[in-house]
Image (tube, rainbow, N blue to C red):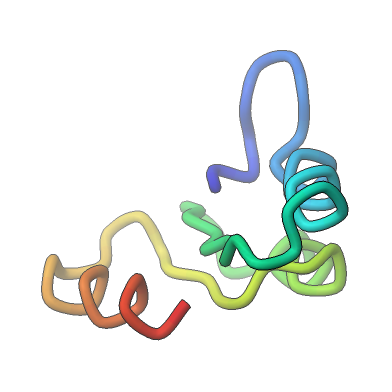
Length: 65
């Protein structure tokens, strides 16, 4: 889930996804390591990665979520 999207925030989208389909794991993808990551985790995201993460890190994070 990208935190900065046109039309809606990733945090609000995460809340809606988790509320409607709690079994779906949400992984946050962001350019910034800031307080918005914590807000996304509080909204129900199960993890986060920075956008410059290596492919093997992305695969491991997806498997974990």
